Image 1 (tube, rainbow, N blue to C red):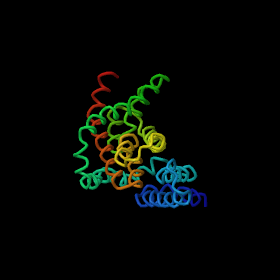
Image 2 (image 1 turned 135 degrees about the horizontal axis):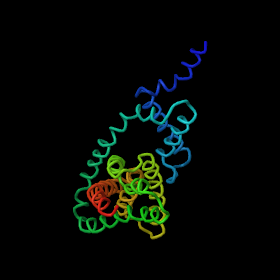
Image 3 (image 1 turned 90 degrees about the vertical axis):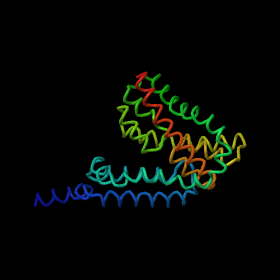
Image 4 (image 1 turned 30 degrees about the horizontal axis):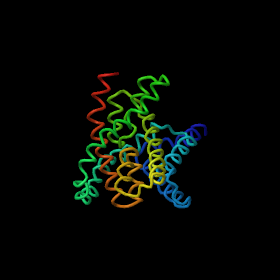
Amino acid sequence: MSELIRDFARLPQTWFETPIAAIALTLAAYFVGVRLFKLMRHPSWFPPVVIAALLIAAVIALLPIGVEDYNRGAAWLTLLLGPATVALAVPLYQQLPQIRALWRPILMTLPLSATLAACYALLIAWAMGAPPEVLASLAPKSVTSPIALSLTEELGGSTALLMGALMVTGITAIFGVEWLSRWLKIRDPRLIGLALGINGHALGTVRAFEISHQAGAFASLGMSLTGAFTAVVLPVVWHLFV
């Protein structure tokens, strides 16, 4: 009888050792997040992906399973991050004439913006005495997840801390860009989309597509170029100064 009870208690953990359970939980949490997002009248500060993350965290905390069990099962979904990012080339291609017309201001703006996005968090953390592992986890926080994960592993940071920083950065960028655009009376969807993509990575890009297709295309451009620039420059600067 005791063995039966023990086996029953281990059942959730056994389920999550298979990809099906983890993938099903992830998809269910996301669809619930989308539903709640609509019921709350689309708050920009609480996107569906954040709701889904909180729901998954609650399930993991309540059931006798570990984060490692869930990560092993959800690894198949992680593989889709790269193709999903590459698929953003479609709206980029559709807006190519406008992007060509603005290539000079984009080229002048993006390196400075990407550098500031990485530096301000590092400076604050360094001033507060954060160890190198924390600094390495915060440095790629404004880059899309596939590139950020690779950079964090290369720099010796914590993946868990990085994912939290990515979430906070995306939400803060959405709120900040929309507030500043209203305050400064900026209504050009190209500028708003580019700012969301540079500062808010994938979360900002999703929000930009909700504004307009044009804003989403420029957010994709900002996110892609920021990722490429950071992937090339950040490891070099890190190994020179840290």
